[in-house]
Length: 140
Ligand code: NI
Image 1 (spheres, rainbow, N blue to C red):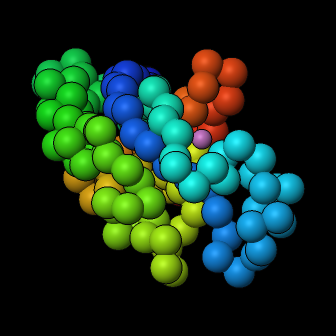
Image 2: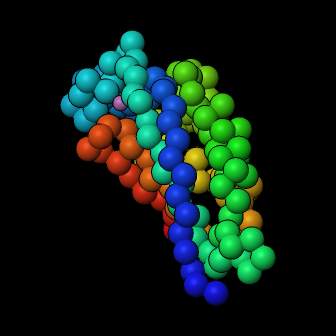
Image 3: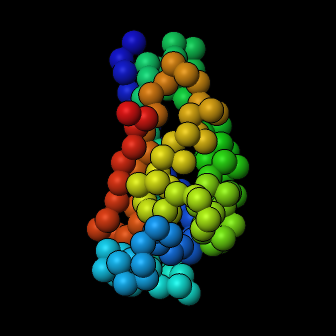
């Protein structure tokens, strides 16, 4: 059967601060600029989830989009939306967590989705932090 990619878009709003605890404040401002602001700032994140696989002979689907929609809602939107990423998500805790860059957020999103989507299907996520800045991750 042909190999096709299906896509689903989603959104969430979240606040973050980019900061490396091992650096001085001056070094953080030098590298992260306004993103190091201690009072945080927000983004309207845009997410595109791409699932690639062969078309199922019985359904005509690569994956049921209703199922994909519900997985994204439960695993990603409910988890990230209206959160302060540094303060509220364990992965980004200010003590020893990851810096909540779009790169690191995309990896966490991919890892969460990967557990819920059939292993025979390929998965790629695209995360927009702004209209012009976006990252992709496909598990490599
Ligand atoms: Ni930012």
